[in-house]
Length: 193
Image 1 (cartoon, rainbow, N blue to C red):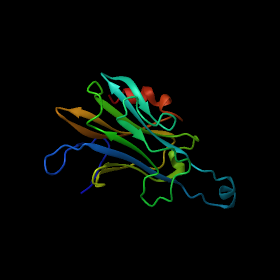
Image 2: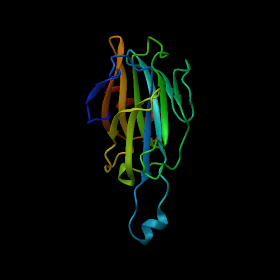
Image 3: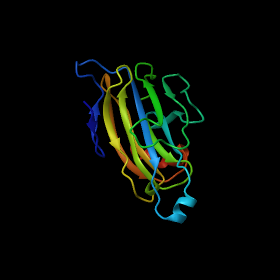
């Protein structure tokens, strides 16, 4: 059963049988918003959203996974590849980041997931954008966060997973930001650590 997350809501990343999740996937999906009018259709261009995962230890970035660095240095976090145009908005993942929670080094205490418009369009030009967390072992969707459309921002700090005792928790952040790359978002990310 999937939970629809709201901004700031947290969920525990444990299975219903009490066991801990071992591998999770953060999926990102979107499509370009339909433009109206004759000239709008002539000037339409694809929207390239990018998913990134920034790994932190004591609030300091120690690694990042994104379209130009597909695997973390320790191999625990993997990006499935860049999608430059999005999907048809049918609910499938256009980009994914897979996290092997058991292999994440012990000094890494938070992983923050972001989405940014590399092509510079604002979220007013994006439809059906979402991120979701899945149990990669079973394929079960655990949580979904709808990236609210509209707004003049070009990025969003989506969510984070953080160590909690002996397990992990996910927190939906949903904070708008501006930037074309994860590097542009680092000051905005810092406020959520």
